[in-house]
Image 1 (cartoon, rainbow over the protein chains, first blue to last red):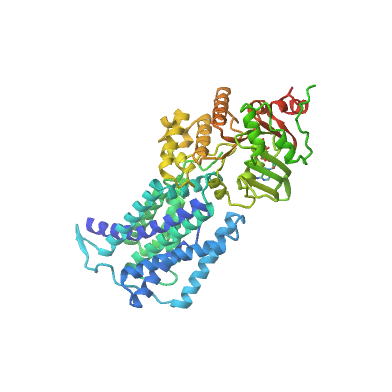
Image 2 (tube, protein in one colour):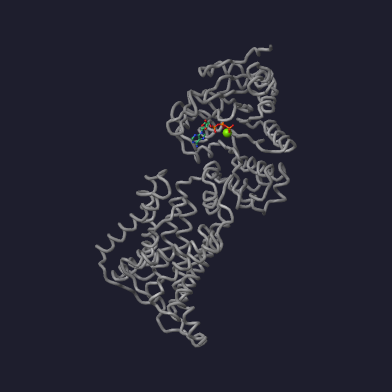
Length: 291
Length: 276
Ligand SMILES: Nc1ncnc2c1ncn2[C@@H]1O[C@H](COP(=O)(O)OP(=O)(O)OP(=O)(O)O)[C@@H](O)[C@H]1O
Ligand SMILES: [Mg+2]
Protein backbone atom coordinates (compact mmCIF):
# COMPACT_ATOMS: atom_id res chain seq x y z
CA UNK A 1 0.00 0.00 0.00
CA UNK A 2 2.46 2.59 1.25
CA UNK A 3 5.19 0.92 -0.74
CA UNK A 4 3.15 1.35 -3.90
CA UNK A 5 2.47 5.01 -3.17
CA UNK A 6 6.16 5.54 -2.51
CA UNK A 7 6.95 3.82 -5.79
CA UNK A 8 4.71 6.21 -7.73
CA UNK A 9 6.14 9.22 -5.91
CA UNK A 10 9.71 8.14 -6.76
CA UNK A 11 8.94 7.83 -10.43
CA UNK A 12 6.95 11.09 -10.35
CA UNK A 13 9.80 13.01 -8.72
CA UNK A 14 12.27 11.59 -11.23
CA UNK A 15 10.33 12.69 -14.31
CA UNK A 16 9.28 15.83 -12.46
CA UNK A 17 12.92 16.81 -12.01
CA UNK A 18 13.28 16.84 -15.79
CA UNK A 19 10.17 19.00 -16.09
CA UNK A 20 11.64 21.27 -13.42
CA UNK A 21 14.86 21.69 -15.42
CA UNK A 22 12.86 22.44 -18.57
CA UNK A 23 10.73 24.88 -16.59
CA UNK A 24 13.88 26.64 -15.35
CA UNK A 25 14.86 27.04 -18.99
CA UNK A 26 11.51 28.63 -19.84
CA UNK A 27 11.86 30.87 -16.80
CA UNK A 28 15.36 32.08 -17.67
CA UNK A 29 14.42 33.06 -21.20
CA UNK A 30 11.05 34.46 -20.20
CA UNK A 31 12.69 36.72 -17.63
CA UNK A 32 15.31 37.96 -20.03
CA UNK A 33 12.99 38.61 -22.97
CA UNK A 34 9.35 37.82 -22.11
CA UNK A 35 9.55 35.23 -24.86
CA UNK A 36 8.20 31.72 -24.25
CA UNK A 37 10.83 29.65 -26.00
CA UNK A 38 8.97 26.66 -27.39
CA UNK A 39 12.26 25.26 -28.68
CA UNK A 40 13.11 24.42 -25.04
CA UNK A 41 11.89 20.83 -25.49
CA UNK A 42 14.33 20.31 -28.36
CA UNK A 43 17.26 21.04 -26.05
CA UNK A 44 16.06 18.18 -23.82
CA UNK A 45 15.93 15.93 -26.87
CA UNK A 46 19.37 17.08 -28.08
CA UNK A 47 20.94 16.30 -24.70
CA UNK A 48 19.77 12.68 -24.80
CA UNK A 49 20.40 12.03 -28.49
CA UNK A 50 23.87 13.60 -28.50
CA UNK A 51 24.94 11.53 -25.49
CA UNK A 52 23.75 8.39 -27.28
CA UNK A 53 25.72 9.35 -30.39
CA UNK A 54 28.92 10.31 -28.57
CA UNK A 55 28.86 7.16 -26.42
CA UNK A 56 28.36 5.07 -29.55
CA UNK A 57 31.38 6.77 -31.12
CA UNK A 58 33.47 5.52 -28.20
CA UNK A 59 33.86 8.67 -26.09
CA UNK A 60 33.89 8.19 -22.31
CA UNK A 61 30.68 9.14 -20.49
CA UNK A 62 31.91 12.40 -18.87
CA UNK A 63 33.19 13.72 -22.22
CA UNK A 64 29.99 12.67 -23.99
CA UNK A 65 27.93 14.48 -21.35
CA UNK A 66 30.05 17.60 -21.52
CA UNK A 67 29.64 17.78 -25.30
CA UNK A 68 25.92 17.02 -25.01
CA UNK A 69 25.62 20.06 -22.73
CA UNK A 70 27.84 22.36 -24.77
CA UNK A 71 26.35 21.71 -28.20
CA UNK A 72 22.75 22.50 -27.18
CA UNK A 73 24.07 25.65 -25.45
CA UNK A 74 25.68 26.71 -28.72
CA UNK A 75 22.47 25.76 -30.55
CA UNK A 76 20.56 28.00 -28.14
CA UNK A 77 22.85 30.91 -28.92
CA UNK A 78 22.55 30.26 -32.66
CA UNK A 79 18.75 30.11 -32.44
CA UNK A 80 18.76 33.42 -30.59
CA UNK A 81 21.14 35.01 -33.10
CA UNK A 82 19.34 33.73 -36.20
CA UNK A 83 15.72 34.06 -35.16
CA UNK A 84 15.05 36.22 -32.09
CA UNK A 85 17.66 38.91 -32.66
CA UNK A 86 16.81 39.78 -36.30
CA UNK A 87 13.11 39.87 -35.41
CA UNK A 88 13.64 42.21 -32.44
CA UNK A 89 10.81 44.65 -32.12
CA UNK A 90 8.46 42.25 -33.91
CA UNK A 91 6.37 41.78 -30.78
CA UNK A 92 6.48 38.95 -28.28
CA UNK A 93 3.77 36.89 -30.04
CA UNK A 94 5.76 36.76 -33.28
CA UNK A 95 8.91 35.80 -31.38
CA UNK A 96 7.06 32.92 -29.71
CA UNK A 97 5.89 31.65 -33.09
CA UNK A 98 9.46 31.95 -34.35
CA UNK A 99 10.63 29.67 -31.52
CA UNK A 100 8.04 27.09 -32.62
CA UNK A 101 9.50 27.31 -36.12
CA UNK A 102 13.00 26.86 -34.73
CA UNK A 103 11.89 23.76 -32.82
CA UNK A 104 10.44 22.26 -36.02
CA UNK A 105 13.73 22.83 -37.79
CA UNK A 106 15.82 21.25 -35.01
CA UNK A 107 13.48 18.26 -34.74
CA UNK A 108 13.44 17.80 -38.52
CA UNK A 109 17.22 17.90 -38.77
CA UNK A 110 17.65 15.35 -36.00
CA UNK A 111 15.02 13.10 -37.56
CA UNK A 112 16.93 13.09 -40.84
CA UNK A 113 20.34 12.68 -39.20
CA UNK A 114 19.51 10.25 -36.39
CA UNK A 115 16.39 8.54 -37.70
CA UNK A 116 13.05 7.89 -36.05
CA UNK A 117 14.12 5.07 -33.77
CA UNK A 118 14.28 5.22 -29.99
CA UNK A 119 17.65 4.91 -28.29
CA UNK A 120 19.17 4.84 -24.84
CA UNK A 121 22.37 4.23 -22.94
CA UNK A 122 23.07 2.45 -19.63
CA UNK A 123 22.30 4.14 -16.33
CA UNK A 124 25.30 5.99 -14.83
CA UNK A 125 25.80 3.62 -11.90
CA UNK A 126 24.07 0.39 -12.76
CA UNK A 127 20.40 -0.47 -12.53
CA UNK A 128 20.26 -2.52 -9.33
CA UNK A 129 17.38 -0.89 -7.46
CA UNK A 130 17.77 0.30 -3.93
CA UNK A 131 14.97 -0.89 -1.60
CA UNK A 132 13.34 1.95 0.34
CA UNK A 133 10.44 1.00 2.62
CA UNK A 134 9.36 -1.70 0.23
CA UNK A 135 9.62 0.45 -2.88
CA UNK A 136 12.37 0.15 -5.46
CA UNK A 137 14.41 3.25 -6.18
CA UNK A 138 16.52 3.17 -9.34
CA UNK A 139 20.04 4.57 -8.86
CA UNK A 140 19.49 6.72 -11.94
CA UNK A 141 16.59 8.42 -10.11
CA UNK A 142 19.09 9.52 -7.48
CA UNK A 143 21.32 10.88 -10.23
CA UNK A 144 18.38 12.82 -11.68
CA UNK A 145 17.26 14.27 -8.35
CA UNK A 146 20.79 14.92 -7.12
CA UNK A 147 21.81 16.67 -10.33
CA UNK A 148 18.69 18.78 -10.22
CA UNK A 149 19.51 19.81 -6.66
CA UNK A 150 23.07 20.72 -7.65
CA UNK A 151 21.85 22.75 -10.64
CA UNK A 152 19.27 24.57 -8.52
CA UNK A 153 21.84 25.45 -5.86
CA UNK A 154 24.34 26.55 -8.51
CA UNK A 155 21.72 28.78 -10.14
CA UNK A 156 20.74 30.22 -6.78
CA UNK A 157 24.36 31.05 -5.98
CA UNK A 158 24.84 32.53 -9.45
CA UNK A 159 21.80 34.81 -9.18
CA UNK A 160 22.23 35.84 -5.55
CA UNK A 161 26.01 36.06 -5.23
CA UNK A 162 27.51 37.11 -8.55
CA UNK A 163 27.33 40.46 -10.27
CA UNK A 164 26.69 38.70 -13.61
CA UNK A 165 23.69 36.90 -12.12
CA UNK A 166 22.33 40.08 -10.56
CA UNK A 167 22.77 41.76 -13.93
CA UNK A 168 20.48 39.16 -15.50
CA UNK A 169 17.89 39.71 -12.76
CA UNK A 170 18.13 43.47 -13.25
CA UNK A 171 17.60 43.04 -16.99
CA UNK A 172 14.51 40.96 -16.27
CA UNK A 173 13.13 43.67 -13.97
CA UNK A 174 13.85 46.69 -16.16
CA UNK A 175 15.87 46.34 -19.37
CA UNK A 176 16.15 50.10 -19.86
CA UNK A 177 17.49 50.77 -16.38
CA UNK A 178 19.79 47.78 -16.84
CA UNK A 179 21.29 49.37 -19.95
CA UNK A 180 21.75 52.62 -18.05
CA UNK A 181 23.91 50.92 -15.40
CA UNK A 182 26.09 49.45 -18.14
CA UNK A 183 24.62 46.01 -18.69
CA UNK A 184 24.82 44.70 -22.23
CA UNK A 185 21.24 43.42 -22.37
CA UNK A 186 21.84 41.77 -25.73
CA UNK A 187 24.48 39.57 -24.15
CA UNK A 188 22.21 38.81 -21.21
CA UNK A 189 19.74 37.38 -23.70
CA UNK A 190 22.44 35.21 -25.29
CA UNK A 191 23.66 33.95 -21.92
CA UNK A 192 20.06 33.15 -20.93
CA UNK A 193 19.52 31.10 -24.08
CA UNK A 194 22.79 29.22 -23.55
CA UNK A 195 22.00 28.53 -19.89
CA UNK A 196 18.42 27.49 -20.62
CA UNK A 197 19.57 25.14 -23.36
CA UNK A 198 22.28 23.51 -21.25
CA UNK A 199 19.92 23.04 -18.29
CA UNK A 200 17.26 21.52 -20.55
CA UNK A 201 19.86 19.23 -22.12
CA UNK A 202 20.98 18.12 -18.66
CA UNK A 203 17.44 16.92 -17.99
CA UNK A 204 17.40 15.01 -21.27
CA UNK A 205 20.74 13.35 -20.55
CA UNK A 206 19.71 12.29 -17.04
CA UNK A 207 16.31 10.94 -18.04
CA UNK A 208 17.31 8.97 -21.14
CA UNK A 209 18.52 5.81 -19.31
CA UNK A 210 15.08 5.64 -17.66
CA UNK A 211 12.67 6.53 -20.46
CA UNK A 212 14.73 6.26 -23.69
CA UNK A 213 14.90 9.11 -26.18
CA UNK A 214 14.03 9.78 -29.80
CA UNK A 215 13.87 12.78 -32.14
CA UNK A 216 10.36 13.73 -30.95
CA UNK A 217 10.57 13.45 -27.13
CA UNK A 218 11.03 17.20 -26.93
CA UNK A 219 7.43 17.93 -27.82
CA UNK A 220 5.85 16.40 -24.71
CA UNK A 221 8.74 17.10 -22.32
CA UNK A 222 8.86 20.71 -23.48
CA UNK A 223 5.11 21.20 -23.13
CA UNK A 224 5.12 19.72 -19.65
CA UNK A 225 8.06 21.90 -18.70
CA UNK A 226 6.03 24.86 -19.89
CA UNK A 227 3.05 23.74 -17.83
CA UNK A 228 5.35 23.38 -14.82
CA UNK A 229 6.69 26.90 -15.32
CA UNK A 230 3.17 28.34 -15.55
CA UNK A 231 1.88 26.32 -12.59
CA UNK A 232 4.83 27.49 -10.50
CA UNK A 233 4.31 31.08 -11.61
CA UNK A 234 5.98 32.15 -14.84
CA UNK A 235 9.20 33.96 -14.06
CA UNK A 236 9.80 32.40 -10.65
CA UNK A 237 12.79 30.06 -10.27
CA UNK A 238 11.60 28.26 -7.12
CA UNK A 239 8.15 28.12 -8.73
CA UNK A 240 9.60 26.31 -11.74
CA UNK A 241 11.18 23.65 -9.53
CA UNK A 242 8.08 23.11 -7.41
CA UNK A 243 5.85 23.19 -10.49
CA UNK A 244 8.00 20.57 -12.23
CA UNK A 245 8.03 18.16 -9.29
CA UNK A 246 4.30 18.67 -8.74
CA UNK A 247 3.42 17.95 -12.37
CA UNK A 248 5.62 14.84 -12.30
CA UNK A 249 4.15 13.44 -9.08
CA UNK A 250 0.51 14.12 -9.96
CA UNK A 251 1.09 12.57 -13.37
CA UNK A 252 2.65 9.44 -11.84
CA UNK A 253 -0.14 9.10 -9.27
CA UNK A 254 -2.78 9.40 -12.00
CA UNK A 255 -1.01 6.83 -14.13
CA UNK A 256 -0.70 4.49 -11.16
CA UNK A 257 -4.09 4.81 -9.51
CA UNK A 258 -6.35 5.79 -12.41
CA UNK A 259 -4.97 4.88 -15.81
CA UNK A 260 -1.86 5.67 -17.72
CA UNK A 261 -4.16 6.64 -20.59
CA UNK A 262 -4.85 9.90 -18.73
CA UNK A 263 -1.23 10.53 -17.80
CA UNK A 264 -0.50 13.07 -20.52
CA UNK A 265 -3.74 14.94 -19.91
CA UNK A 266 -2.87 15.57 -16.25
CA UNK A 267 -0.57 18.57 -16.71
CA UNK A 268 -3.08 20.34 -18.88
CA UNK A 269 -5.90 19.83 -16.41
CA UNK A 270 -3.57 21.01 -13.68
CA UNK A 271 -2.73 24.21 -15.54
CA UNK A 272 -6.43 25.10 -15.77
CA UNK A 273 -7.13 24.31 -12.14
CA UNK A 274 -4.14 26.26 -10.80
CA UNK A 275 -4.63 29.26 -13.04
CA UNK A 276 -8.33 29.37 -12.17
CA UNK A 277 -7.62 29.64 -8.45
CA UNK A 278 -4.22 31.35 -8.61
CA UNK A 279 -3.91 33.35 -11.83
CA UNK A 280 -0.23 34.07 -11.18
CA UNK A 281 0.64 30.47 -10.47
CA UNK A 282 1.95 29.17 -7.15
CA UNK A 283 4.90 31.53 -6.70
CA UNK A 284 4.35 34.08 -9.46
CA UNK A 285 5.41 37.68 -8.93
CA UNK A 286 2.84 39.69 -6.99
CA UNK A 287 2.90 42.54 -9.44
CA UNK A 288 4.27 42.78 -12.91
CA UNK A 289 3.45 46.46 -13.27
CA UNK A 290 6.30 48.90 -13.56
CA UNK A 291 5.86 52.57 -13.08
CA UNK B 1 12.55 94.29 -18.85
CA UNK B 2 15.88 92.76 -18.16
CA UNK B 3 17.45 91.25 -21.21
CA UNK B 4 20.50 89.39 -20.12
CA UNK B 5 23.73 90.52 -21.72
CA UNK B 6 25.03 87.16 -22.81
CA UNK B 7 21.76 85.32 -23.20
CA UNK B 8 21.87 83.81 -26.64
CA UNK B 9 18.51 83.80 -28.31
CA UNK B 10 19.11 80.80 -30.44
CA UNK B 11 17.06 79.61 -33.34
CA UNK B 12 18.55 76.17 -33.48
CA UNK B 13 21.72 77.50 -35.05
CA UNK B 14 23.58 78.68 -31.99
CA UNK B 15 27.24 78.12 -32.57
CA UNK B 16 29.28 76.25 -30.05
CA UNK B 17 31.75 79.10 -30.07
CA UNK B 18 29.13 81.51 -28.86
CA UNK B 19 28.31 79.13 -26.05
CA UNK B 20 31.89 78.70 -25.03
CA UNK B 21 32.37 82.44 -24.86
CA UNK B 22 29.36 82.87 -22.62
CA UNK B 23 30.87 80.61 -19.97
CA UNK B 24 29.69 82.75 -17.18
CA UNK B 25 31.74 85.38 -15.50
CA UNK B 26 29.30 84.96 -12.62
CA UNK B 27 30.31 81.34 -12.21
CA UNK B 28 30.49 80.44 -8.53
CA UNK B 29 33.73 78.64 -9.31
CA UNK B 30 35.38 82.03 -9.73
CA UNK B 31 37.23 83.69 -12.56
CA UNK B 32 40.13 81.23 -12.60
CA UNK B 33 37.86 78.31 -13.30
CA UNK B 34 35.95 80.32 -15.87
CA UNK B 35 39.07 80.84 -17.92
CA UNK B 36 40.10 77.21 -17.56
CA UNK B 37 36.67 76.08 -18.73
CA UNK B 38 36.90 78.32 -21.78
CA UNK B 39 40.29 76.91 -22.73
CA UNK B 40 39.56 73.24 -22.02
CA UNK B 41 37.51 71.31 -24.56
CA UNK B 42 33.97 70.75 -23.27
CA UNK B 43 33.19 67.37 -21.72
CA UNK B 44 30.08 66.86 -23.83
CA UNK B 45 29.34 68.44 -27.11
CA UNK B 46 26.16 67.67 -29.03
CA UNK B 47 25.85 68.95 -32.60
CA UNK B 48 22.80 69.00 -34.85
CA UNK B 49 21.29 66.07 -32.98
CA UNK B 50 18.11 64.52 -34.33
CA UNK B 51 16.00 61.64 -33.02
CA UNK B 52 12.71 60.10 -34.04
CA UNK B 53 9.92 57.98 -32.64
CA UNK B 54 8.86 56.16 -35.77
CA UNK B 55 8.39 58.94 -38.33
CA UNK B 56 7.86 61.65 -35.76
CA UNK B 57 10.87 63.83 -35.01
CA UNK B 58 11.34 64.30 -31.28
CA UNK B 59 14.64 66.20 -31.60
CA UNK B 60 15.75 68.49 -34.42
CA UNK B 61 19.18 70.02 -34.83
CA UNK B 62 19.94 70.14 -31.12
CA UNK B 63 23.23 71.82 -30.20
CA UNK B 64 24.29 71.60 -26.58
CA UNK B 65 27.60 71.84 -24.77
CA UNK B 66 28.43 70.84 -21.22
CA UNK B 67 31.74 72.21 -19.96
CA UNK B 68 33.82 70.40 -17.39
CA UNK B 69 32.68 70.82 -13.79
CA UNK B 70 29.62 72.69 -14.98
CA UNK B 71 26.04 72.22 -13.92
CA UNK B 72 23.89 72.68 -17.00
CA UNK B 73 20.10 72.83 -16.73
CA UNK B 74 17.78 71.83 -19.54
CA UNK B 75 14.27 73.15 -19.10
CA UNK B 76 11.17 72.91 -21.22
CA UNK B 77 7.46 72.10 -21.15
CA UNK B 78 5.85 68.66 -21.15
CA UNK B 79 6.73 66.69 -24.24
CA UNK B 80 9.40 69.17 -25.38
CA UNK B 81 11.98 66.43 -25.82
CA UNK B 82 14.06 66.67 -22.64
CA UNK B 83 13.90 62.97 -21.83
CA UNK B 84 14.50 62.08 -25.46
CA UNK B 85 17.65 64.22 -25.48
CA UNK B 86 19.04 62.49 -22.38
CA UNK B 87 18.09 59.07 -23.78
CA UNK B 88 19.88 59.86 -27.02
CA UNK B 89 22.97 61.05 -25.16
CA UNK B 90 23.12 57.83 -23.13
CA UNK B 91 22.44 55.74 -26.22
CA UNK B 92 19.21 53.93 -25.35
CA UNK B 93 17.59 56.00 -28.08
CA UNK B 94 19.07 56.15 -31.58
CA UNK B 95 20.35 59.41 -33.01
CA UNK B 96 19.03 59.94 -36.53
CA UNK B 97 21.19 62.97 -37.26
CA UNK B 98 24.12 64.88 -35.83
CA UNK B 99 26.86 63.85 -33.46
CA UNK B 100 27.63 63.38 -29.79
CA UNK B 101 31.22 63.89 -28.69
CA UNK B 102 32.16 62.93 -25.13
CA UNK B 103 35.59 63.95 -23.91
CA UNK B 104 36.90 64.06 -27.45
CA UNK B 105 35.45 60.70 -28.52
CA UNK B 106 32.60 60.49 -31.02
CA UNK B 107 30.10 58.24 -29.24
CA UNK B 108 27.12 58.82 -31.54
CA UNK B 109 26.75 55.14 -32.40
CA UNK B 110 28.39 53.58 -29.34
CA UNK B 111 26.42 50.93 -27.41
CA UNK B 112 24.86 52.27 -24.19
CA UNK B 113 26.82 49.95 -21.90
CA UNK B 114 30.06 51.22 -23.44
CA UNK B 115 29.00 54.81 -22.79
CA UNK B 116 28.46 53.96 -19.12
CA UNK B 117 32.03 52.65 -18.99
CA UNK B 118 33.22 55.99 -20.38
CA UNK B 119 31.56 57.68 -17.42
CA UNK B 120 28.14 58.70 -18.77
CA UNK B 121 25.70 57.82 -16.01
CA UNK B 122 22.01 58.50 -16.36
CA UNK B 123 19.37 58.75 -13.64
CA UNK B 124 16.25 58.04 -15.68
CA UNK B 125 12.88 59.73 -15.45
CA UNK B 126 10.70 57.95 -12.90
CA UNK B 127 13.77 56.62 -10.98
CA UNK B 128 13.43 53.03 -12.25
CA UNK B 129 15.21 51.33 -9.37
CA UNK B 130 15.31 47.52 -9.56
CA UNK B 131 12.28 47.03 -7.31
CA UNK B 132 12.55 43.35 -6.31
CA UNK B 133 16.31 43.60 -5.71
CA UNK B 134 17.72 44.88 -2.44
CA UNK B 135 18.92 48.45 -1.99
CA UNK B 136 22.47 47.12 -1.63
CA UNK B 137 22.16 45.10 -4.85
CA UNK B 138 20.91 48.18 -6.68
CA UNK B 139 24.09 49.98 -5.60
CA UNK B 140 26.30 47.06 -6.59
CA UNK B 141 24.62 47.00 -10.01
CA UNK B 142 25.41 50.69 -10.43
CA UNK B 143 29.06 49.60 -10.56
CA UNK B 144 28.32 46.81 -13.08
CA UNK B 145 30.79 48.04 -15.67
CA UNK B 146 33.61 48.74 -13.24
CA UNK B 147 36.61 46.48 -12.84
CA UNK B 148 38.06 48.08 -9.71
CA UNK B 149 36.14 45.80 -7.36
CA UNK B 150 38.01 46.86 -4.24
CA UNK B 151 36.98 50.47 -4.68
CA UNK B 152 33.32 49.50 -5.14
CA UNK B 153 32.88 48.62 -1.46
CA UNK B 154 34.35 51.99 -0.46
CA UNK B 155 32.00 53.77 -2.83
CA UNK B 156 28.99 51.97 -1.37
CA UNK B 157 30.11 53.20 2.04
CA UNK B 158 30.30 56.76 0.65
CA UNK B 159 26.76 56.42 -0.72
CA UNK B 160 25.53 55.33 2.71
CA UNK B 161 27.21 58.37 4.24
CA UNK B 162 25.64 60.65 1.65
CA UNK B 163 22.17 59.05 2.00
CA UNK B 164 22.02 57.45 5.49
CA UNK B 165 18.49 56.15 4.92
CA UNK B 166 19.88 53.78 2.29
CA UNK B 167 22.09 52.13 4.88
CA UNK B 168 19.11 51.52 7.14
CA UNK B 169 17.17 49.97 4.26
CA UNK B 170 20.13 48.19 2.64
CA UNK B 171 18.64 44.68 2.85
CA UNK B 172 15.11 45.62 1.83
CA UNK B 173 13.77 45.38 -1.72
CA UNK B 174 14.18 48.76 -3.40
CA UNK B 175 10.50 48.71 -4.33
CA UNK B 176 9.55 49.10 -0.67
CA UNK B 177 11.23 52.53 -0.42
CA UNK B 178 9.24 55.74 -0.57
CA UNK B 179 9.39 57.86 -3.72
CA UNK B 180 11.97 60.20 -2.25
CA UNK B 181 14.13 57.34 -0.99
CA UNK B 182 13.93 55.69 -4.41
CA UNK B 183 15.15 58.93 -5.97
CA UNK B 184 18.11 58.99 -3.59
CA UNK B 185 18.80 55.37 -4.51
CA UNK B 186 18.55 56.11 -8.24
CA UNK B 187 21.07 58.93 -7.85
CA UNK B 188 23.35 56.81 -5.68
CA UNK B 189 23.13 53.93 -8.18
CA UNK B 190 24.27 56.25 -10.97
CA UNK B 191 27.08 57.62 -8.78
CA UNK B 192 28.30 54.06 -8.25
CA UNK B 193 29.27 54.13 -11.93
CA UNK B 194 31.80 56.88 -11.06
CA UNK B 195 30.27 59.29 -13.56
CA UNK B 196 32.29 61.93 -15.31
CA UNK B 197 28.98 63.31 -16.56
CA UNK B 198 25.82 62.76 -14.56
CA UNK B 199 22.53 62.99 -16.46
CA UNK B 200 19.57 63.69 -14.16
CA UNK B 201 16.04 63.46 -15.55
CA UNK B 202 13.51 65.29 -13.36
CA UNK B 203 14.86 64.12 -10.02
CA UNK B 204 12.28 66.18 -8.12
CA UNK B 205 9.27 64.86 -9.99
CA UNK B 206 6.41 63.76 -7.77
CA UNK B 207 8.20 64.52 -4.51
CA UNK B 208 6.92 66.43 -1.49
CA UNK B 209 8.48 69.91 -1.14
CA UNK B 210 10.76 68.86 1.71
CA UNK B 211 12.14 66.01 -0.38
CA UNK B 212 12.54 68.27 -3.41
CA UNK B 213 14.77 70.43 -1.23
CA UNK B 214 16.73 67.37 -0.16
CA UNK B 215 17.26 66.28 -3.76
CA UNK B 216 18.41 69.75 -4.78
CA UNK B 217 20.73 69.87 -1.78
CA UNK B 218 22.26 66.60 -2.98
CA UNK B 219 22.75 68.05 -6.47
CA UNK B 220 24.38 71.19 -5.08
CA UNK B 221 26.65 69.02 -2.93
CA UNK B 222 27.68 67.03 -6.01
CA UNK B 223 28.52 70.08 -8.04
CA UNK B 224 30.54 71.37 -5.09
CA UNK B 225 32.61 68.19 -5.51
CA UNK B 226 33.29 69.28 -9.11
CA UNK B 227 30.87 66.78 -10.67
CA UNK B 228 29.72 67.67 -14.19
CA UNK B 229 25.94 67.53 -14.36
CA UNK B 230 23.26 67.86 -17.03
CA UNK B 231 20.01 68.42 -15.15
CA UNK B 232 16.55 68.19 -16.71
CA UNK B 233 13.83 69.82 -14.67
CA UNK B 234 10.27 71.01 -14.99
CA UNK B 235 10.99 72.96 -11.85
CA UNK B 236 12.76 75.52 -14.06
CA UNK B 237 13.26 78.10 -11.35
CA UNK B 238 15.07 75.82 -8.94
CA UNK B 239 17.16 74.31 -11.72
CA UNK B 240 18.26 77.59 -13.32
CA UNK B 241 19.01 79.08 -9.91
CA UNK B 242 21.78 76.55 -9.30
CA UNK B 243 22.94 76.14 -12.91
CA UNK B 244 26.03 77.57 -14.60
CA UNK B 245 24.27 77.40 -17.93
CA UNK B 246 20.75 76.79 -19.07
CA UNK B 247 19.11 75.59 -22.25
CA UNK B 248 15.45 75.93 -23.13
CA UNK B 249 13.94 73.29 -25.39
CA UNK B 250 10.62 73.57 -27.23
CA UNK B 251 9.15 70.88 -29.50
CA UNK B 252 12.50 69.22 -30.02
CA UNK B 253 14.56 72.34 -30.66
CA UNK B 254 16.80 74.46 -28.45
CA UNK B 255 15.25 77.92 -28.53
CA UNK B 256 17.27 79.71 -25.90
CA UNK B 257 20.50 79.24 -24.03
CA UNK B 258 22.68 81.21 -21.72
CA UNK B 259 24.07 81.79 -18.29
CA UNK B 260 21.81 80.12 -15.74
CA UNK B 261 21.08 83.11 -13.53
CA UNK B 262 20.50 85.34 -16.52
CA UNK B 263 18.02 82.94 -18.10
CA UNK B 264 16.10 83.22 -14.85
CA UNK B 265 15.55 86.90 -15.61
CA UNK B 266 14.88 86.43 -19.31
CA UNK B 267 11.44 87.71 -20.22
CA UNK B 268 10.58 84.78 -22.42
CA UNK B 269 11.64 82.19 -19.88
CA UNK B 270 9.80 83.97 -17.08
CA UNK B 271 6.60 84.02 -19.07
CA UNK B 272 6.73 80.51 -20.46
CA UNK B 273 8.27 78.50 -17.63
CA UNK B 274 8.26 80.45 -14.43
CA UNK B 275 4.68 81.65 -14.66
CA UNK B 276 5.74 85.21 -13.93
N1 LIG C 1 8.06 56.01 -26.72
C1 LIG C 1 7.57 57.03 -27.45
N2 LIG C 1 6.90 56.78 -28.60
C2 LIG C 1 6.41 57.80 -29.35
N3 LIG C 1 6.53 59.09 -29.03
C3 LIG C 1 7.17 59.40 -27.90
C4 LIG C 1 7.73 58.39 -27.05
N4 LIG C 1 8.31 58.99 -26.00
C5 LIG C 1 8.13 60.31 -26.18
N5 LIG C 1 7.45 60.57 -27.33
C6 LIG C 1 7.11 61.90 -27.85
O1 LIG C 1 8.29 62.62 -28.06
C7 LIG C 1 8.15 63.96 -27.64
C8 LIG C 1 9.20 64.28 -26.61
O2 LIG C 1 8.97 63.48 -25.45
P1 LIG C 1 9.90 63.52 -24.18
O3 LIG C 1 9.48 62.44 -23.29
O4 LIG C 1 11.30 63.55 -24.62
O5 LIG C 1 9.51 64.92 -23.55
P2 LIG C 1 9.90 65.56 -22.16
O6 LIG C 1 10.39 66.92 -22.44
O7 LIG C 1 10.80 64.67 -21.42
O8 LIG C 1 8.49 65.63 -21.43
P3 LIG C 1 8.12 65.48 -19.88
O9 LIG C 1 8.37 66.79 -19.25
O10 LIG C 1 6.66 65.15 -19.91
O11 LIG C 1 8.93 64.38 -19.31
C9 LIG C 1 6.73 64.09 -27.11
O12 LIG C 1 5.95 64.66 -28.12
C10 LIG C 1 6.31 62.68 -26.84
O13 LIG C 1 4.93 62.53 -27.07
MG1 LIG D 1 10.64 63.67 -19.66
